[in-house]
Length: 431
Image (tube, rainbow, N blue to C red; front, side, top):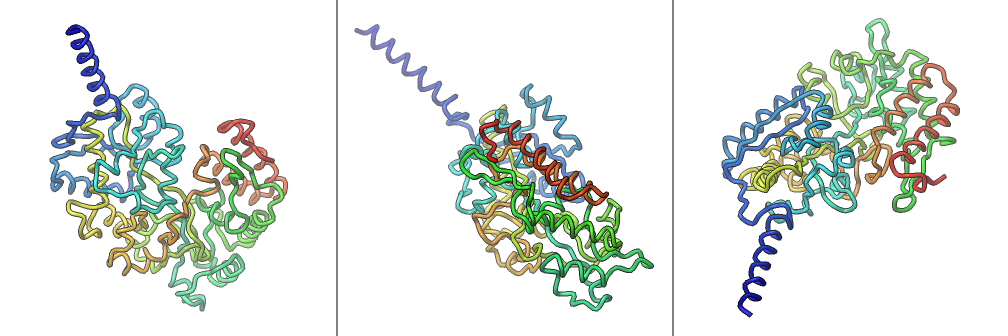
């Protein structure tokens, strides 16, 4: 009887230890305090300089004595391809949320962040969070909304006799305004569309013809290119701008905008800082007044991290949104990213902060409906959105150089249907 009891107690003890260590990926005595974690990302431009300063502020001021050692690199995908399988990836990562499907087996499931920190799920735009989930499980939190917006040069508008406070609200208005702005003697073009950049193409296509891919039922996808009258109209419109010299064939439209040579264009919020630095008198707005589309970049945590490292990373993410005390949100990491770099936030308390409400630009760009996601071209559940968008960029360029539109759309339809089958299986394709 005594032997039975001792054996039973020993088994229970081992069971409880295993439950603590393995049951949720961290032990009960993990504190995250005094821990050093690695943080990899590829923000190599001026926004990278701002990120360095924000991380340094965290290292100086956070109450947990956590140190973040950040490495900014080009080619992070190549680095992750070898470091993830070897269990050597950094604890904290910034990734395009679409990559959660590619790296899911190496990422820490983050639903525990709601209990391990003071962050609340209800304080994030639901549409953004959906772009961080796989099968209902959370693998990241939104870092920035890399959506596309309309930029317009107010000085060029005024010079052409246009109201500098009224951007175009449809394709016809864009064409009419761009014609008036175009001045080849000054190397000024009214329109600045990249002929092959899917990030710029896709918002315009969606406005004209809807999503490239729709999820008709859970896990069932339909491709909507061939015979789409809206897409055809958009491509006809683009080709008209190029054929009539209203839009340049150059690829470096950003530099032309910063040089006051472009009247109207579409790009992400990252262009704003450079245009401000170049003293361009410009404004930003939602394209034709519709909610922006693009993609969300997010904070992710490597599964190979220790419990203390995971908790330290979660606390950094908490600090990014709330600072040390949850007050003065405009000065938090997320607040500075919005005000200094120009990206609208998905964190609702910051959206409601007085300083944020007072920013005309941020108010104009911020998604108003919490349920609206930003993903271009496809629903958040689709696993290969980047591959789909690359087809769109190639299709646009082919049309501009003379390929018949109906033929180009039919070819793109087949190419994207093949992507659906490759990533979701033949049974997922609906025709």
